[in-house]
Length: 247
Image 1 (cartoon, rainbow, N blue to C red):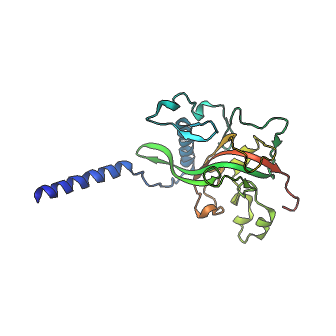
Image 2 (cartoon, helix red, strand yellow):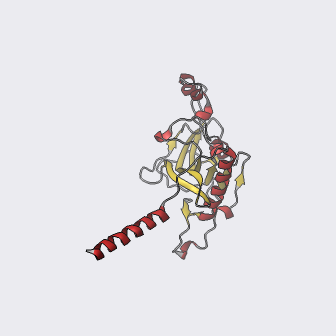
Image 3 (cartoon, helix red, strand yellow):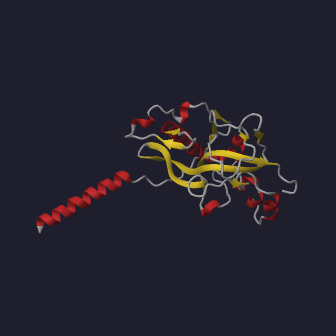
C-alpha cells in the first residue's frame, strides 16, 4: 500500500512539473504602451526568424526535427520593407500578377482576398518575449477555399458609420486595420481571378498592435477583443473594383 501511495505521489509530482514547463505565463498588460510596442517589435523579429514561405507562399514554421527545410530562407532573410507605423510587408518574388494585368489597389477599393490571417499578443514569459495566444482571423485556405470580398477591416462603408450609435463606432479606426490597409496598397491586385483558381500567395503583412487597434475601442470581429493584438496576414488579392460613390 505504501508503494502504491509513493508511485501516485511521484506521478503527480511529475505531472505538475510537466504542466508547469508547458504552461505560458498569463498575459499582463504593461502600463506603459511603449513596453507593449517593444514586445511587439521583438516578437515580430522572432516570428520572422522562425518561419519561411512554402511553395505556395504559406507561412510555415521551421521544423526542429526534419532537415528538409534547412535550405529555406527565413522571413527575415527575404526582402522586406518596414513602414513608419512599424508594419512590415514582404512582396513574394515570382508570385505577383503580370504587369500587363496588374491592378493598382486604392484605399477605398472593393478587394477580393484569399489567404490566412492570425492575431497574437506579444508578451514576456520567463524572460523571453514572444507571440502568444494565436487566434485565427481569416482563413480561406483550409476548408472553404473561397476569397473574401470587401472585408470591413480594409474599408468600412459610409452607411455603417452614419448608422453607428456611439462616437467610437462612427470612426473608421473602429473597424479598419490601419497597418494592413496602408501596406496592402504596396501590392498589385490580380485581374479578377476566378474564385476556384489555385492560390499562390503573393505576400505577407505583419501589423504590430499599435498599427491595428492598440488599446482603442474596436469592432468585435469574431466576438473577441483585439486589444494589444498584432496581426499576420498571408494573402493573395484575387481582384479589386472601384467602389460606388454612395459607399
